[in-house]
Length: 156
Picture 1 (spheres, rainbow, N blue to C red):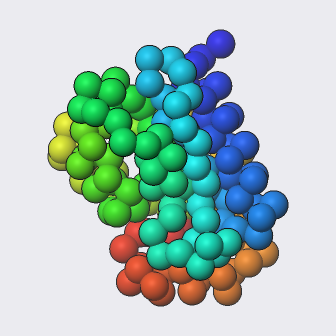
Picture 2 (tube, rainbow, N blue to C red; picture 1 turned 30 degrees about the vertical axis):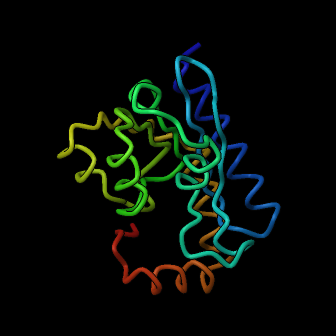
């Protein structure tokens, strides 16, 4: 079994939790040395938050790690990370990000790559379908979120 696919399935479970809570279905897990050390999902709507993207939630839920821990981590996220989330990856020296899909929305992957972060895109159909279904059925919610950030990501 491909471990990247296993961890992405765990991130998808987080996205599904967000959806059940009435939120945007994006999920993430932070993995260190082959073990999931934290989980997170998008909580913008549920918490009326401006920063609780799935990636930020997973990094926050890991607690205060030290440099040696962060450099052993991989962040798995169901959707291409935005500039804020990519900045957190860079700030904490997380060396690898695995993205479920980036065909529906392209985040700041070039920012990650320019800062020597390894980026792998799985093109996972489950990630794509989960997000597309939400954005089609809740276009007003998604459009509002894009307006808040000034459309810094590309919706395809």
